[in-house]
Image (cartoon, rainbow, N blue to C red; front, side, top):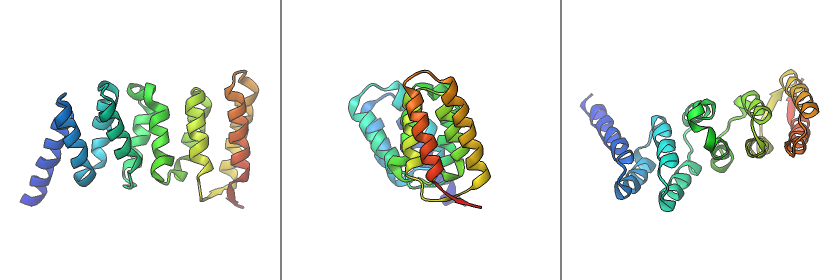
Length: 178
């Protein structure tokens, strides 16, 4: 039991350093998170990404997140995408899925809705994520998403319209079970 507590203290100290505002401590904390990271670190990491303008820190955070392999981090990333707090970096957060190879195929509905509701860059990242799916989907769910996209395509008169058309084509090519 004591070991778990010690590990929690270690993790808490890493997060404290991450949020310290001291660039050297932040860089060390990012390196430590590669070894001792937990899904709960996602939001503090994104906070630092938004608040800190140091190019090296941004690069190290990007590298850390693009190397994510922990499936449990998906839920935290989905929460971040849904949060208004991270709206300005939503395309970056979505890109983590395809950069890291995390399987978010269970969240296809959420992703397509993000593509429809948000701007060109979000749509582009969602398209890239879905293009990389290697899963089988429920035919009814995919058909519903295609209908949602067709409606959005009719209503959209921006450059995003072509991306929505591409997304529709990608959905039509996904493996479906009948």
